Length: 439
Image 1 (spheres, one colour):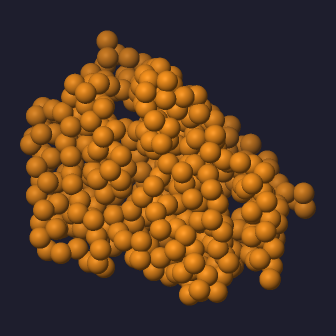
Image 2 (tube, rainbow, N blue to C red):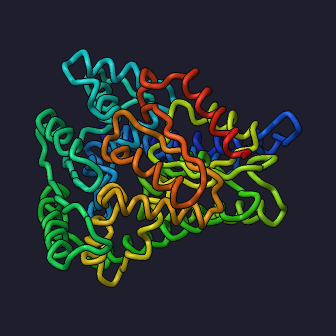
């Protein structure tokens, strides 16, 4: 029945319906026109294709159990190994972000809190645990995992979160421990330590998948992941152009495939198409913000439930958030990937995320981005429930002001839980920040 459901529900019915919806969305986007009353240009047309891809991914997930082995993984974990063995991969963090963008996260957080989970826990974790406990999700249903893969290079919360998942589902949990990086380059023994752990994933995943690992297929998947990451970085780098053809809010929206579907050919093709569309905007002299006067760098995760209103509010005042440390995290490590030495290079990649590096290195990276993107200011999202990303932001704000001379704002919120966001307080601080941008 599982295979029949996959055939009927996903391949024969679901995918054609999603293609039809994409064409409708494209026609609607084509009909939109910019005007003096619209501070933002119409959305990039590629958003319709992205929506089709991500909807298709979650739709397939509803029918994946019994057809493909299923793995739930953290955002900083190596999916390339799992894809080589045919796993269907789910990122609980990405699912939580989707819940946040659709204004479903608060209720799910409250479900988790009613079950005893503290409000001080990451709102991604509370959102997904709430979905697990209630069975409620905007994607219909998530497939039951056969394997859990957790990497500590983003935070320690994931370790305890995935232990809860392992206890609930009774499935194997594989942990990859990544030493925190205090210097600019990892030590050889640290690379060897992580490489050995990555190699040890293979026999566990082989047993769960019931098939042997193919080095040839692995190399091809790593090559595709590298190409997609490089193309994503090219897309983000186009924001150096004046006026910028995209905003960081666009990047947050188009981030899904590089996180969930990295290593698949469709992802590489999608980002090539998005890059071509952005290049056409540049050739036509079109900026994402109709009258770009100020350029700003964003630090930390998006405020998922306020992306649209924040983007509109800032654009109406001529502010384009042209870059973000978060979106760049998925492209900046592409040069480290080497398909000819996949395990060695992946060890370096998974040691290097911005959340696994010191506060000083993060400040240095932001200072470089201020210069590279000609930023007139910086907004640091002080995220209540992402402590590793927010740690040191007061010093980083002061360092940016002193070292670059641009104003920097600490904006208090939470990436997924709207109860930690004050509309009035945010508006007041942003108004003052925009005044500072104007000198």
